Length: 153
Image (cartoon, rainbow, N blue to C red):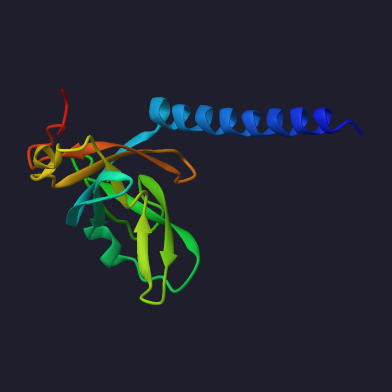
C-alpha cells in the first residue's frame, strides 16, 4: 500500500477522533446539568506550561474508593452546589482514583489561566462544571463565595 495513502488515512482518522471529542464536549456544555463543587484547597503555582491552579474538591473526601474509576450520585442545593447522594441523585459525576494514597479526582484537577492573572482567582471557592447523564464533565470556570464568575474580562 502507498505510504502517502496510509499517512493520509491515519491523519484523517486522528482528525475525525479529535473532532468527535470536541463535539461531545460542546454537547455537554450546551445540554449538561450545572454542578458546582466546593473547593477544598486550591494551589496556585506556575510551571513551564504556564500559570495554573491545582484544584481539590471537598466532595472528594466523601468518596470511599479503592482503585480505578466510578460514578458518584450528587444532590444539588438551590445554588447547584453538589453533595454526595445516598443513591443516584439528581446528577452523576465520574471520579478517578490515582496513586497509592487513593487520591479521588473529580472532573479536572487543574485550571489554567493567563500568566500573571493568579490574583484574579485567589478568592475561588467553587468550580462550576457541566455534567452529562453518564457523569462526564467539562469545567466551565471558577466562582467566588457569591457564585460570581472569576477572571471574566
